[in-house]
Length: 341
Image 1 (cartoon, rainbow, N blue to C red):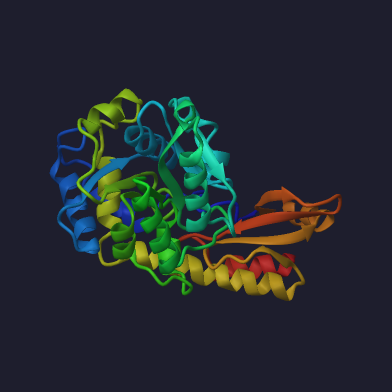
Image 2: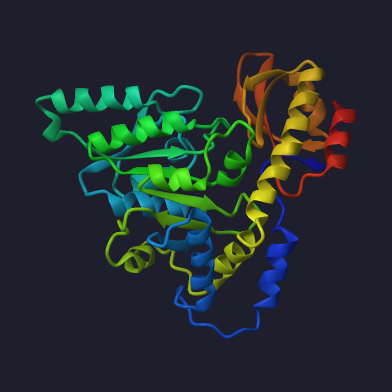
């Protein structure tokens, strides 16, 4: 069975496992108070070129989103996002469960536009009853988006400027950041992300790690007693080393970026192949998530040998499907898929 279901269906890149094994018998303190965690933070700071970044390691994307959002909001505030945003659609109400409303706005190609945000904020502030409403308290985006699309530097700058105008922290979900920044379509690097956001996370789970994300606060704005906030939400890992050691490996000799480039290369091969086979694009993604329109009959035939996701039912005869590449995708797998198509 070939699998293109997601980018976390395999374990971890061999170099990540090698590093974990190398450090396995070293005795270290818990809760992120160990030298390996500090070493991983130092590598991330060096990659971004800033010593003032505050970094913590968490185990997964939903935990990171919930903790990041809830820790930045007051009790009467909500988080603004595109209506396709992961926190609005695919996190089982994790944000709402923390007591904060998700304020979903229309998207364009999966992206929240600065003009849409400004119009929403102007309407909110002009409403005489706004004090009786959930107050917009921050903005959530992802890069890449749920549709695999990317913000340009100009788009992210405009959104960042708009957030600052209205006093809204901008939070970027980087679950697949390595794939987004390594796409030939990207005109940004990780330093731009750090400069234009108030907080963001570097995804590990989907970019070569067994598990784990690195949450980065860019303006000295980590909430006080952040460890207590994490623990209160049941997400404090005693063996924080398990995550930080993986990031140490990912940010050694450019491994994180190599993984991204490899997956993008395979995704572009996959995209070209599907187009040649007559499958239309559902979304024109330049990243490792690829979306196509296929007939239901073709989908069912392919499912016998290939794992992939049905993204949306379009009509009685057709659906949108998603194929995802990763560090583990090989040329041979793409060749085998082509024969099955």
